Image (tube, rainbow, N blue to C red; front, side):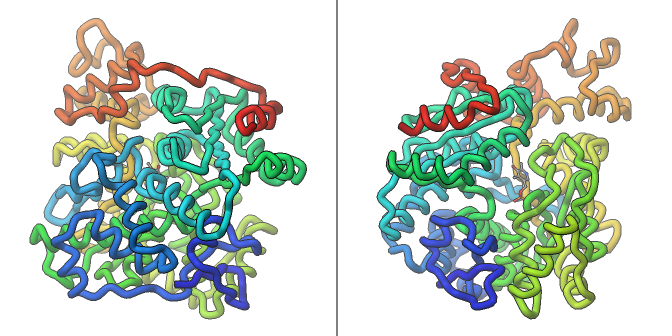
Amino acid sequence: MNYTSTRDSQKSAVLSAEAILTGLSPDGGLYVPCSIPQITLSDIEKLKDMSYIERAKWVLEKYLTDFSADELDQCVVGAYGGGNFGHGDVAPVVKLSDSAYVLELWHGPTCAFKDMALQILPRFLTCSMKKMGETRTTAILVATSGDTGKAALEGFKDVDGTKILVFYPSDGVSDIQKLQMITQDGGNVMVSAIRGNFDDAQNGVKEIFTDNAAIEKLDERGYVLSSANSINWGRLVPQIVYYVSAYCDMVKSGEIALGDKINVCVPTGNFGNILAAYYAKMMGVPIGKLICASNENDVLTEFINTGKYDKNRKFHTTMSPSMDILISSNLERLLYALSESGAADVNALMKSLSDNGSYQLDEAMKSKVSELLWAGSADDKETLRQIAKTFGAHKYLADTHTAVAINVYEQYVAATGDKTKTIIASTASPYKFGDSVLAALDVAIDGKDDFEQASLHQSRDETNANIVPRGMNIADMDDFQKLDLLCKISGMAIPPSLSELKGKEKKYTQVVDKGEMDKVVYEFLT
Ligand SMILES: *Cc1c(COP(=O)(O)O)cnc(C)c1O
């Protein structure tokens, strides 16, 4: 299988090892496979009786043809085997109702769906380094607002030939997220807080990446920089696997017959997860509509409904922070796939995006987009109400991101009447965003439809006695007390990786000014 850039009209091709090692094509485009491997119903019939690991090997060998069977085996077993995921099925499908099913993607070490990709990417990367004759140590630099940093740390810890350094804004992540990072294990890791916000952290990392003197200095020391960010093909391809796997599970459990269509609904930020569902559909998995769910940052909803992508809008900080995004980078791959002329169209659209912050699809592309996708959004208030509603109706505890998707799925059914069985991607454990989830349940159990207050995390002394122990306010509880209370209410076990944080040593307590980030880099990469 060859890969080409979304911006290269010559269609020059590279193998997957090069695409994974370089991440971005030199012309600024994203790598896409030159053809889409096919899966037949009889393939699915066979796969349905296999484990997640075997299904993953089957799918991945179609895309990563320059990897040997042995190499792929090591990557897949290392990532998804050995109890690394807290559920035997890795990504189980849970039935909510007669038509809605939840695909749980958060049983990995950091309790968010980023693990599905970031547990295997470091293994792809070290294989690719060997193939490409890269002998330097790969230094991964990450600026994080929470989820990605921890998932990258867990993925890269103690991986030969790599070191990883994560910067986070000292006041910009939740307490649990901070604890997750500063207690990180591994001999090749470093974590540093910076005084500033996420943009400061990201700009600091970008400066180092584009500083030729820094790159030269690190090269002399035997390092090459890499970012492992979400446009890397090595992060996208493992996400195709779980849509194939979910379809197999639906057939195996008798929920659908082989060949029946299902819809897929995804809480979307950078458009990576839903794009993986698109590739699964193009491979031949019987998938109908792709339902794209956004929070108040609804740039994709507008795009799908009008054909206009416009990032000139207010940025909202929401309760589903991993979807707070104005530029969905992976959308470029979809544009490439849907356009007649491919790279020429993509170049024009991306130029318009960087010049004007917006672009408009022509009628032909627009109708392809609306045939494929349906979109909706839910704000924080609707998200909280949905958490309470879903728990009340199905005893299912959804995190804030998942709740956005469930809400938009319900909007879709109301608008279209389409009762096709639908897989809703669940992207984080409710315990990872326990604060908001608890606030939603608290308000609901009080019988007060006062979600505005909950979203402000205000305590209501006299009314929250129902679920909070006497004499206590949720606002006064620490994070672990909140997790315990959530466990009591839901009966759902707290993931050990979160409850164990309480006793763990805090190793990385350093806080630096944003101007000192390069110093931290040089001290770590000696
Ligand atoms: C990253 C993330 C998303 C968004 O996924 P994309 O692939 O960027 O669309 C949604 N939910 C959670 C919890 C995430 O961490």
